[in-house]
Image (cartoon, rainbow, N blue to C red; front, side):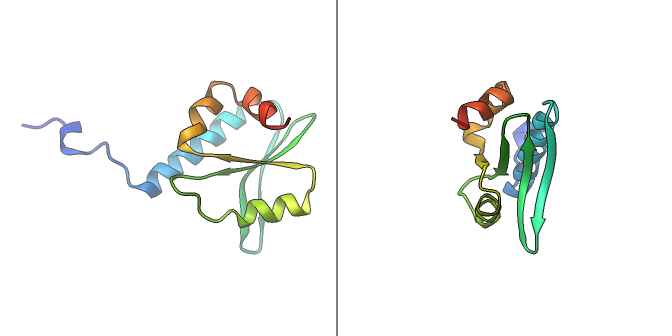
Length: 108
């Protein structure tokens, strides 16, 4: 008999891991006091737009090798004051510990 973990059942494909990471970031952002949106224009999109009293953040969640950042680039070109943030598996734990502090640190 094998345990569930021994059979490799805990392995998620990259698509599922990416969706879980994106949901976790959204959940963390939703705990903050600012306003949370997403942005889409034609085929371009940004995962999260977060606006607090001081700053506007354009946040992309990426898993593994960074894919296209064309949505992030388009948004920050259109909204010059927006601060681009890219969250990955590598920096998510820092973000999750204190999302507001993480964002403020990246706005300086």
